[in-house]
Length: 114
Length: 118
Image (tube, rainbow over all chains, first blue to last red; front, top):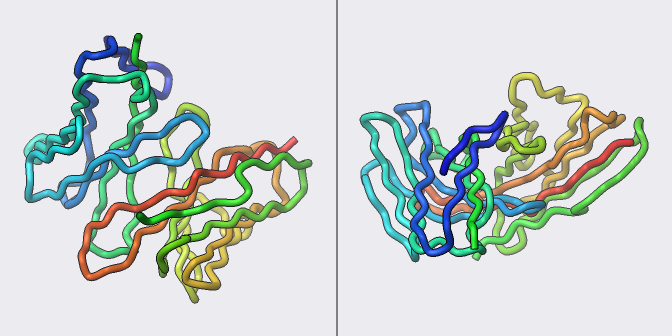
């Protein structure tokens, strides 16, 4: 199930189940979105990205869905494994320039129950 | 793939000490690097944008005299936390994006520096 803590919501799933992590973004002008995975004590690791002219993109075991109408982004992980346990962040890019920083969402902690 | 390296990974020092953190892009040149700070169980907050050969751009509320940024080459940016105090204890992370004609490339992050001020 999903719970919201003081800062970081947590999603607990059984190993082998599918996980869905949601993210709401704020700026309708954002044109590029990225999902990152952060393990304890490490920097964010790129998972998958999507441009605003798309509404779905698939990778290996992961799918990102983009709904621009309601400014919502989701990350689906198929057949969740213990190694997927981490904090997941969505990030939005508000411009085309390489000088544009990313704006991160609050993050969701995924706990996989073996 | 693009690799960003940070050093050191972990620092413990006394209050009042200045600490320098290095961020290197190992296999690409980066005219722009970004510095983030992350407190426990929170998201990454952008501190500043580091620009090679020019002054950094700081986010609102970030003291530029406290957090000195130098981007002297296309592969190295440094963040110096001057006269650090316990409230500066945090996880500092840098990122960079490989250049190219294709826009919308993902940023790549270093593994962060955990700073603990006693």
